[in-house]
Amino acid sequence: MKRAGVFTVLLLCIVAAAQKPRGAQWRKIGDFANVPEAPAKTLIQCGTLIDVRTGRAEKNVLVELAGNQVKSVSPGVAGANQLPPGSIDLSTETCLPGLIDVHTHVLLQGDITAEDYDKQLLKWSPEYRTILGTQAARKALEYGFTTIRDLETEGAGYADVDIKKAINAGVIPGPRMQVATRALDVTGAYPLLGYAPNVPVPHGVQLCDGADGCRKAVREQIMYGADWIKVYSDRSYYIDPNPPAGISPAPVLNDIPTFTVDELHAIVDEAHRQRHKVASHATAYNGVHNSVEAGIDTIEHGDYISDADLKLMVQKGTYFVPTLYVGEYVAEGRAKAGAPVWLDMIKISADTFRRAVKAGVKIAFGTDAGGFDWNIDPAVEFGLRVKYGQTPAEALRSATVVASELLGMQKEIGAIEPGKLADIVAVKGDPLSDITVLEHVDFVMKGGVVFKK
Ligand SMILES: [Zn+2]
Image (cartoon, rainbow, N blue to C red; front, top):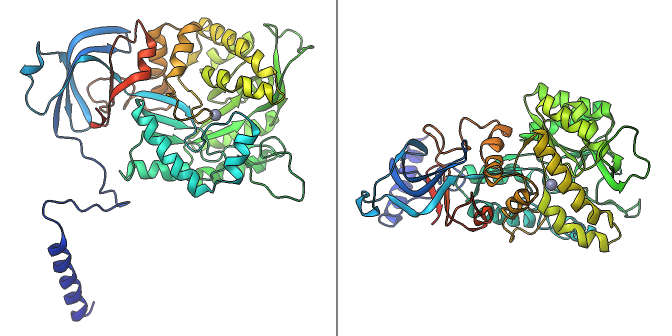
């Protein structure tokens, strides 16, 4: 650099420093300088703390944090007035680990009918949808979900990668995210559908056909930031009047499988080869069966799973992510739009859930939030899970310990324990006797930083 150049830069720095308001922080957006810092040391007094591993409620617990991590968990002080200044007093609250939702769509704003869906893809730009997505991410965090797995953008490209990046950079508030980017389905199976062949329309997924074509799509999505590969394994659900021999229980909810088993194998093989996992939207018999056979890691929805496939899932360690609430949310609207099977599916999915609990399948907490309005707290799912056969402690474990294992983050999150990230939420009341109190989280801390108080 020439002398004059150096001088000019120096002069500019001096002018800039003079203009900086006294005591203000420079905010370098996008430059990783905006992440709120956790204080070096914090004490939290919890009236009750739920040990999610044992399902026990411990009274009067003191949690000590060092930066973004939990340092110790010990019997707490008797009164809040004995806490040192700067401590967080939750002595009238129940503390729990930050909740984890492993099936969300921050880029979707409710989708009961095809009309709702088509509007978002045809009339809203990806930029506008991303703005709404940032709002959904903030809401998820404020509801108490400190980590989410977002299972595809529904036509909004790779915007989930950018939302995750903006959260990690501290540009916007939101949960820790794992993302699936565009998802995969075969030609002719995923909306937008029903438009004239000469009218090009966007699709809610990346289309791929054939083992090699799908392998390439997996490579592309991983290249652009996918943590997970998501596939749609079935569509067009119906109660099968002539189910395959030996499949129980009846009635069998059947489907049109999308990918061939050969294609699914290629997708799973390519993803696993690159140390990524695969989530499969599989609602009915064929979709679930083919996915489990192909070695997929998580079954999403699983409204109908045969007894034989539940057994296979236990053997293979496949996770089950039921989504009971969204099924009830969309049923009536979809029945009115000409698909009454969605009303039958409420009963069928409740029965599958009961059988899965009994069979000992690993059940994780996912909601499909975004499939329903983000103004509804996704924690409504907890109530249905308890109604259909889990104990409140099991439901809580599914949204903490089990979900952290599904994400491969069990060393960092899922429990309030020394060495783990300080993801802590608090509610009034006792979730072990009334799980619906989780719909009213009033304190949220993520990585030692308080986001809601
Ligand atoms: Zn979904």
